Length: 280
Length: 260
Image 1 (cartoon, rainbow over the protein chains, first blue to last red):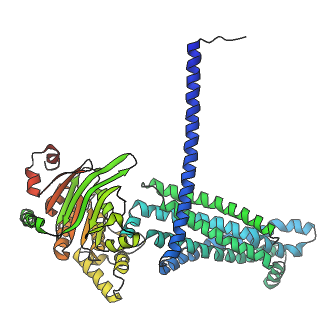
Image 2: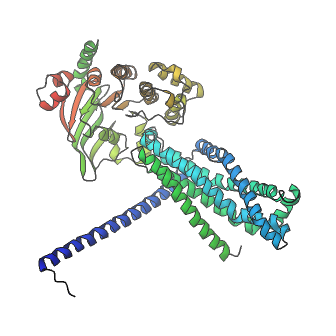
Image 3: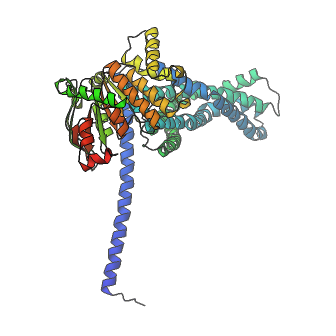
């Protein structure tokens, strides 16, 4: 059955539909525009970082201060995380290996899992939560309280003093923290293995490293430098570009963690693909 | 006491015309998006004077002093500091100009992660890098003594009251012996007694360090105590310029709103 609508009403419906369509298109265009603006800002920020790193005097003292803040102050958290990683992995994997009669392969399997993937990714994600959010909040609050401007007035380039030092400190310290977490993970694994077995630490370590080759260690270490750079760059970018209100400090810290974690996983995916292509 | 002080300042003001210009702003324009904050704003700061810039919130007072130190880029116009046009300087040249300028921020802007001593040491090491440890310590103690807070040397900014933070900020501003000092709302958020103390400190700094100052404020008591000359800023333009006496006698309704 056909419904008859007066021409004037049909015109009105068409006009409203057109308006609705244009509003939706406009909001999508705004979202796309914001994304592109953010992306361009990010690229400019990285360009500025590279230029400041190589163009002027490096702030050595602040760099070591940041290494201490990122590395030493994260040790306890990374120790616990690394230990639990190895411990849990051992407890979870043991029954499957026992059923195949391959219990002796447990140390090697745990070591390879930790060194190639779990150690770098989990440590980097934990550091994204601690370090990137800390940088975002610190720089964000410095911006809100005009401390960054005060620095600029004191003939100090905030980009060089605050950003370059933090990003390089994160780039250097994250790989060291990952290696430390790997080591503690293997110790955690030894504890896990000793719950239902009896194996000496020396024997466990020698079995663990028997299966680990240069091709396992090198790509894993290389990607952790990128993880560190991502953590530093994202944390600093979000803090440095925080808005003016106190609310923006929380938002900067929060978005720093989210974006850094996401980028770590993307970098990991790319690194795994490259490693696979090179047959390492 | 305040009247005597004002009279002395007014006498100084009479000599201002013959003095050397240290900051010369001509036709400064600055917009944020479609909002035009400064429109052809012009101003001269003479050597050794305290120039108070009055105006309502949002009239562009803070914007123009941030343009002077290069924290904001001017859209048009010139800003000459000791005859160097800061709008055309490179970053390195701007750093040289900044070495002669002290800036007291509205919020104090003390570095939260540093002690008072480290806060004062920071600009000193960067601007006067040739100083030795003993000279740095002596300078820090001297300026802290001048603001009456020598006892706060090893405190963190979080342990200080609002007035103390402002005093320490002032100490950090003067520790590098700037020739020009820009005060951005120096008494905002302080009680009347502390505000008067800060205003007196501004006068002490003028006398002791022979600095030329621009004081941005809407606190009339601070203006009365510190001004050698005043400029009223309205709608991004210089609305009225004169001495304190001229402003207080003015029949202009906009000025009367401030001096009632």
